[in-house]
Every structure is written in C-alpha cells, then in structure tokens.
Image 1: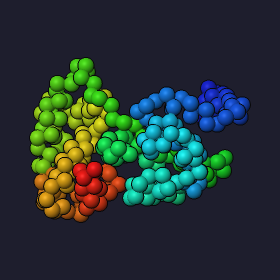
Image 2 (image 1 turned 60 degrees about the vertical axis):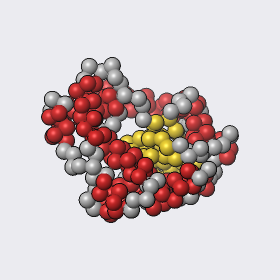
Image 3 (image 1 turned 90 degrees about the vertical axis):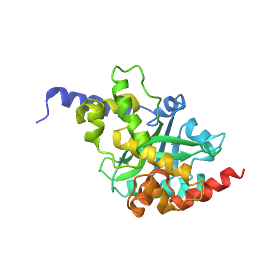
Image 4 (image 1 turned 120 degrees about the vertical axis):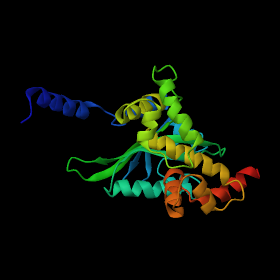
Length: 256
C-alpha cells in the first residue's frame, strides 16, 4: 500500500507534467553540455529533439539537418545503420541500454569514448511511442580521490597485461581492496567499471593494430581473446564495426 507521502508526490508530479507547456523543456539544458549528446526519437527512430552537441558531432550547423531523419540517414555508413538497429531493438521493447561503452568516430574521424544510455518512452497505456537517450564523453580521471593511487596500480596492470586473462579478484588484490571496493572506486575515479576499462584498453589496442598488417585472428589473440568470434562480437558491440570494416575506414583515414 502506498504511503501518503508517495501518493502526494505522484499527484504533484502528474499535475506538474500536465501544467508544463513543453514536454521537451530539457533540450535547452542539454544544449549547454558540450560533453553530452541528447536526443528524443519517435516510434520510427526519427529525431524529434536533439541538442547542439549532437548537431556538431554530426558535422552540421543547425538542428533542422537532423530532425525527422533516422541515424541511418545522418551518420556515415555503416555507423548509422548500427545506431538505427540499436534504436529498433529499444523500440521493440527488447531492452533499454544502460552505460554501453562505445567508441565513436566523429566527422573529423577522431575517435572518442562514450557511455550511452537509451530508454523507451511509453504512453499512458504503456505502449512504446519513442525513445530518448544520452551519450556522455568519458570524463578525465579524478586524481584527487584518496584511493586514486591504489586503483591506478590495478589500471597499470590492465594497460600492461591486457593481452592476458585479467581477473577482478587479482586486480582487487593489487589495489589492496575488496572486489566491492575496487568496483566502487573505479566508477568514482574513472567513470568505468573494471570490466569496461579492460574492454576499452583491448579495443584501443586492437584499433591501433588494425592499422598494420597483422590478421584479425592474430590481433584477437594479442588482445586477450582466445576466440576470434568473441573478439569480433565485442569489437562490433563497442565500435559498431567489425574489425575488417574498421580496418578499411582506418586505411581511408590515414590516406587523407
């Protein structure tokens, strides 16, 4: 049974929701955040609301260049198709996306790491009518945190031994922490879980190696993936591209 406080809160929330003239009032607030992409899309995955950061990341000047279009029409192939497929899964009710670690290539082809969230929007009857999301640039490490040096020791191991099996228990031992502590401090200091940092480090290394002549299987092995297919799945989940597709785009980038 709901408490009186909860009931009053829900009534106040509903009344305020009806009173606000523009349900997309947050657009202006997100325009002021240069490190956060914000968007709202309709049930077909078309942009309805975007912030200025997203416009700039797409190499455009005005929001009108994005409104009414899907990511497949805005982003270069195959990135746009990947983002659109992700949207369709959310719109189908399969799953919301929470802090998906992603490597984005911007119009100038510089890579940037982000954490992406997407959530379905539902009407009063619970039907999905659209989706909303944000993509946050990974912030700099909080080196002022008292636990930074301990956690940094584990990070050094990740950076130096990413090609080896890395166990959370061993990283916790190196940092002289419990598993719960190291997970908590990783999030506070680096805004990533230990697992996400391992993925980031391995994908960073793999993307550099893809500029060379090593085969995808050799790169997978060097980056700690004994299974070639597991490496390809992880790489595509993080970058939106298969290793071979990334290699082709990287070759074009180096030739500019």
